[in-house]
Length: 175
Image (cartoon, rainbow, N blue to C red; front, side, top):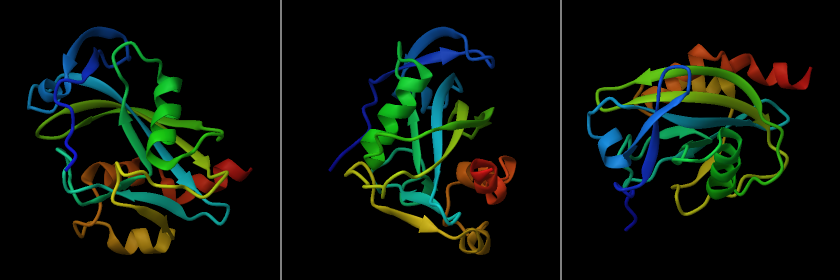
């Protein structure tokens, strides 16, 4: 069984994204509320369907829920663009894609605070979920909206779906 590496080092940042220190995953996810940066990539197909990943049961945050196609932490000393490409490659096997920055905001739960950098793209190839995930698939916008608020998706995905107007984000990419 896989587990998250509680000793992995994350940068600690201020709300503008400037690095102010470092802490372990265990510290960041253990209720310290240390602000640490993450990347999210929402992957659409050409028809406007949105790819979601299924979080494995062994994850320390929101196990077993459907979530953003790609989501991951920026490692200490890593650049934002490099983290986005690394996570897309590791989680979905995506190598060549054109990300568009959609938003940046602070997300806070009872356990952690994240500075979230939200990107969108149209999938250049079929995603190939890695063993870091319990699979994934494309969802129609109607299917997603019929399941909001029913405990199927992570709270972070649901709030980001509304905040970033993901239902209409695909049309912004194809213009």
